[in-house]
Length: 322
Ligand code: TXA
Ligand code: MG
Image (cartoon, rainbow, N blue to C red):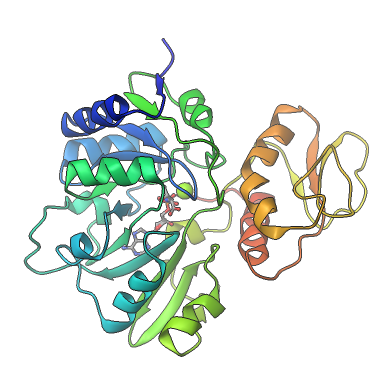
């Protein structure tokens, strides 16, 4: 039996809420990528996320909340974090913050992998906002892909990656509008650090907090396993900055660089981001020897696209978050 994909309806929302409350895992659409969700208070359900994804270790998960009021019940919100949430929530921004000493909503330790901090985000997708609203409590959800595989941007990507023993149902939410995981911001020793680039970029952050955030460098300790070199990886080699495909390569084009498909013939980086993971999947499915990708300008969301592509092209396999 395949995992059921439930169409948008009040009954589907209710089915997802019941499944989460029963400790089952559910695939939820967000504006960035689909998430594999569990009730954040239910340790057994959260543990299943790790086993089902085949994560090699317990890497921390993002807690999805309805908004600032719910976040305020589980984490401390310094002024800059609050300002960022006010500006960009609901939306593709994750804030890593100290956990409250006396939280008024339960979050199991496994969600943060025992760290004193917790990643929180209020997603914008209407379907998942309704689920969160009905739950009335945080929902832990990493991207709904097996460890090291490509992130899911469509409901069927989730349904095809797991079995019904693992995932109760997936809520249909259409193709993810952004297509790249949220920007992750950390607050460490008075500094604001971009831990993972996303569609909200450093200019967007600076505009709100009045100073430029630091971008995590390779010398920094790895605090988000999504920062590990090999990540978001297809099953075949990936060649970047390609202008013409070599024999037996699947070419992903951009702008004037043509290919077997084109991320955005008009050179629109936002459109390219939304198609990136589906394009890499198509490259994988083509059974060619490698995937070649046209140059993508490193500006705006192009920075996040290049971040994901560089990881996909990294040869040395490493322990991975996914
Ligand atoms: O757009 C998104 O953020 C999607 C959707 C489903 O919301 N979620 C997502 O989750 O990308 P995931 O698990 O694939 O990536 C979460 C990243 C990981 O790299 C994890 O290590 C980092 O967030 N993270 C979570 N909690 C953290 C913490 N307390 N400190 C540092 N990094 C943390
Ligand atoms: Mg992921």
